[in-house]
Length: 293
Image 1: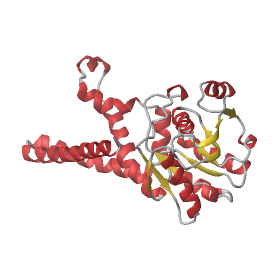
Image 2: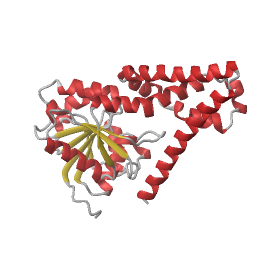
Image 3: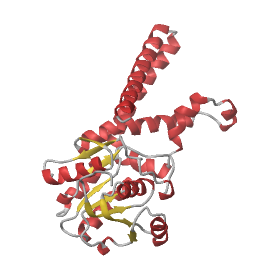
Image 4: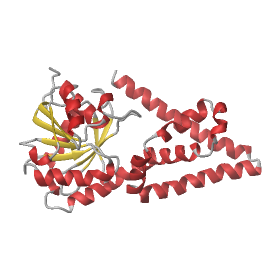
């Protein structure tokens, strides 16, 4: 036993890929639920996940679920609202639903406008990997990482505490933001860096790759992400991301003007500011590692 006091009878996960599979593995490892059920579109994949011990059983139709305490939707962001509503409309009226999507405002708006929407609370566990599929599931993927939950004015405090307790039970730190504040924050810290990495990656012709050392490789690593997934994320968070892209272009223009005018002092100022920001992040990472050691 892990010592956790949080206990579910049944936990269901829609989308048993890397994120959903790791969540199922974490729940089973920590014995947070008596039964972990996977919901997906392929019975063969669900059976394979069951044989690996990631889930206890799988179902295709959410209507086949019986008395599930919590459902976590871990499908791509452009499918989450539809999948959440399928669960809400077919399951027990006592079932709470959350998700793991990296965009919140559009999903929350789509779900909360329905009569069943009060049983949904948005979540975003900030954890992942460049790998995909439940074959790469990691029960420690969420340990020590941050999860953002996005309550609204109509969120039931008991539901809020229930979802918070679940994420804490899988080892996460939990913070609350409004859906809009979450999307702006993630546009700045996740979506804009991916956009910038993609832009840099397109600048270099493959004939130059033999000369690409760690600088290019480190800067463009995240550009290797799934284009379909990131198109959905960019599109669903377009307003915040477009605004921040304009800010980035403005900063790049400062660099450009410094280069054209030979203004070494300006270039040094820009680079020193960037260095200071990055070192602060490194210090924060070090503090976090010591805290969770």
